[in-house]
Length: 111
Picture 1 (spheres, helix red, strand yellow):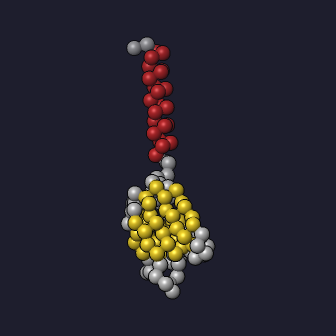
Picture 2 (cartoon, helix red, strand yellow):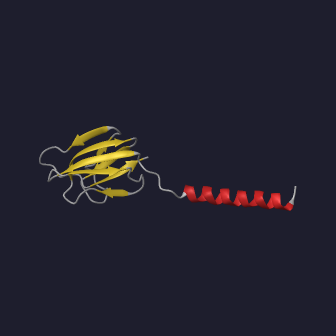
Picture 3 (cartoon, helix red, strand yellow):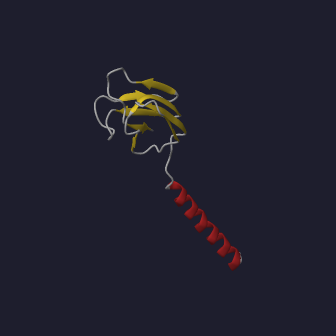
């Protein structure tokens, strides 16, 4: 094998390794949309949210949520995705709060 061919092969291997390493750092998302309505009846749509972390809803909170993603989510009445009064919302379903209960203010993705 010639020196030039070995150099080309080695360069290709390095570039492939860098490409794979770069792609592994990409954040995974919940494919689809999460749509919700605020207490002020304003509609909001979030497209493909990250599967990591806690996601805040509008400051006034959400009274109705449609989970049109391929993963389940958990809704919380707090801004920090904590608390005992959470609501599990499976993929491709929706829910709304019971009258006289606090709105949802955050959600997390189950993956």
